[in-house]
Length: 323
Image (cartoon, rainbow, N blue to C red; front, side, top):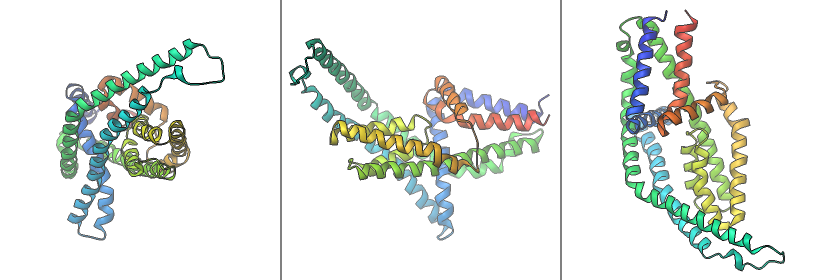
């Protein structure tokens, strides 16, 4: 039999999943608020040792939120502007008129032109969708920022009032929730350090190879690295466009090389070193959980996949194995 605290923990878990299904936008803003509020705690702790704690909190919030606003506010203009430049250049290219010493059938050039037209039309539709969705995305970003500030002030109250969630089997319930919260915070802090290093490496690579917007690319790589597996794709889109617009096909090769090298360094050296003293979750379990929760809860599911793994693992340890 599962203890009273275990049954209550299952009920709370079920309520959270239902809320994510019914109100994914609000719940996504809340989980992102928890992410950023946890990240802010680290520079706040470091600064509070040297300056006034209130001032340290203000500086930490300002730095992190400013970085998020900077990345979001520059992401869409870069995509739109560079996309227009690339598509204008492509639209003026006629492959059938290109001179070559090889005997290539005319049908091949016709295929290239049709393929180019299809890609151009598809990409322009994507740009139009991005432009029309900017207002809602900006509104969502504001909600996330507000939620980050609120979550930062609520975390201590929640920790001090965990006993109210468990009127029965109180001690086991509190220990379970504290362990789960601690594991989740440990994971986020490890991810934050990992993401910071990745952002620095990607930005440095863009600067060395003279890809415009190196600082923006580095900040974007830092923020998107919190999204497992998909973050690198999001950061790669503007980076590839800037590389192609500046250096042509050579720029695409350079960008791919930078991302591959940094990604391999993260997989084999950076991430294992950082997470060696924290959580150990197999990459395949993370991948399956992200795909599963992404299918069930869309974008919000990507961010609750790992917290769910932590929750289930601790539930099994506290309420199943002990029994």
